[in-house]
Image (cartoon, rainbow, N blue to C red; front, side, top):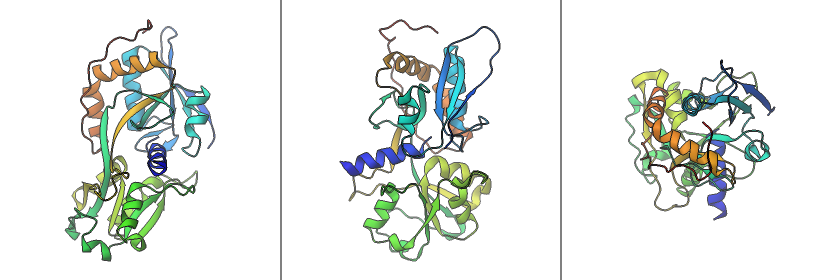
Length: 288
């Protein structure tokens, strides 16, 4: 159970430093703000320039709800939720695993998985972690923390005795380093490693510039380690006591599901649509 909790927390840190607030200007009469917690430099998810797919989704929801956007940016590290959402500095985190505890979640609005990135000319078809082909591969993974909590791919590869083949790539580089999250995918393209197993949105986004020379496939789950899932339903998070905002977001997600799916496609996020159930109006009156 502790391993699953650490995995959820670490996956949440994948999906989303100096704290700063940015208000996105909007003309007209003053409107209620939709206050978003996000990372300032974590493409394809978000950045300060509003270039990530979570930035775009937040803009769609704010427009639908008749609200303005206001951002609190914090680099994803230990205590992200404690220092942002649960400190009342903002009200919404756009992407978290739907199983994440300590917050109230909306309905899931997409499902993604870890992905295996290889070069097309290698003709690798890695469908099982027992495949002997792993024995001769250099495998890139993101290193995501110093708290002893490894990602599901790291656990699975270690369980099957391929740990010696793993090369770690930092999720976060120096402040002036551009998109270090993509280094592991670029290493595959540049033949520095043979394969990478990374969270699907990273895989699809950073593989796209290489066209058909890279292959991105879903990483299979390992039946021997059911507590290390490779696929996750992704939802939005609000504070535990904010049922009203949860209800507003659920209704907006239902209305804007097609636009959100198109945004995910535009960013080459490998995803499965999650059927959005019709949401009743919240019990507390809500201002648009």
